[in-house]
Each structure stands twice: as C-alpha cells, then as structure tokens.
Picture 1: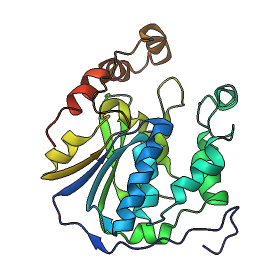
Picture 2 (picture 1 turned 90 degrees about the vertical axis):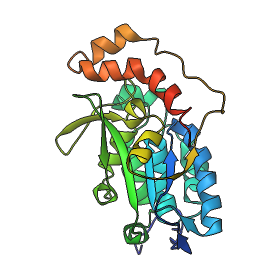
Picture 3 (picture 1 turned 180 degrees about the horizontal axis):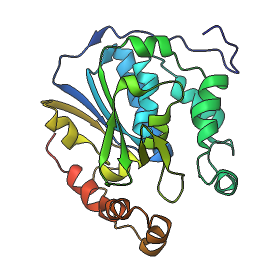
Length: 248
C-alpha cells in the first residue's frame, strides 16, 4: 500500500484463527443500515476470528470486504468521512448517474484513492466468500466467489445495485441487480452448502416483517425486458419473511 491515500491506510491483520468448517456467517444487506454489521465485524476482529464460509448480499457483501482483509475501523472511516458526502449517496446522484449511490465514487474512488482496502491480506484468506447478485433474466441469485472479487469490485457493485435506484450491472455475461432481492437473508444457501452452525447478522429488528412492494406499475415499465426480475422484486417480501424465520 505504497500509494498515497487521503487517509492513512489501515494495515490488514490476519485472524488468530479461522473457525472450523461448518461454521457460517450469513449477512443481510440494507444500504447504510449495513454499517451495523461493520461494528459486528470489528468485534469479530477483536476476538481474532474469521468464518470459513461467508454468504453475503448487498451492503453485507460490501462491508465484509474490510472484515476479510482484517482492517478493523476501515468501515467506520467510510461512514465518518464519506457517507454524508453527496457524492456517496444523494438524490442528486439519481439525476447525474442514474443511481442513488454513485457507484463509481463508492466502489472505485473511495477504495482506490481515499480509504485503502488491503488486497494483499484479503487475497491471503483461505475461506469461501460468496457474494450474491440477482440475474435479471432468471430472477435467481448468481453467487460469485472470493476469486471474482477484484479491485474493480464489479460483483460487489452488482450485489448493491438497488432496483429502480441503480443501473443494471453487466458482469460475466449477466445483467445483475441487488442480491438482496432474490436472497435477502441467504441462510438457505448456507444450509444447502452443508453448514451446521450459523451466525446471521440482520440489519432490521427481530420482529420486522417486510411489506409488499408498492410501485408495481413503475417497476414493470422500467424492467419490461426482465419479467423474472419484476417477479422477484414483487415476491421479495415473502422470501425475506420466510428466510427470517428459518431455524439457524
């Protein structure tokens, strides 16, 4: 990390231990609510533990990068210095970039110029890290592995691209949107992959029940070429509420 950054880079630290196989960390998204997860990650880093399996979508997938890289406090720096910046998230971005979050600023400028991500430490961690994004053609989740996460952060960007508030991301031949649509709490993915013990980090209160999507007409017009994506958005509240009650 010899490059000059706006803020002094936080050197990544390898965990004291990777937990046994079968232990999984499952991460919900939630936009800026996802920074709750960042505090949980710092507690994990204080304890020196890393999960061997992480399934994450949307903001959960974005914030997990600092955890895997062992950079305690990095996500907090992003919150303190940039989340209040209009370049990061604002209605103005919708007009200028067709996205509530300025993806170029969030995923390229911030980690490449302002708050460094320790890619060397990130790459060294021998874990299964799955980032989910919704394939607009099928309405199903496409899972990208840790090796797919490069400094361009296309998979992460795709996982965070909120329908109607962000542009579709084209990556590896797919047209992708927010993974929190098709798999809002990816506990079922983790169970299907054979994990027996799960730590699920939510960004809503325990009793929260997601309501049905209200803007059906606008959604259908915007994504008329992707009926399966429209179906997935309209069905999301059922999936979310089901996954939220799966026995962990």
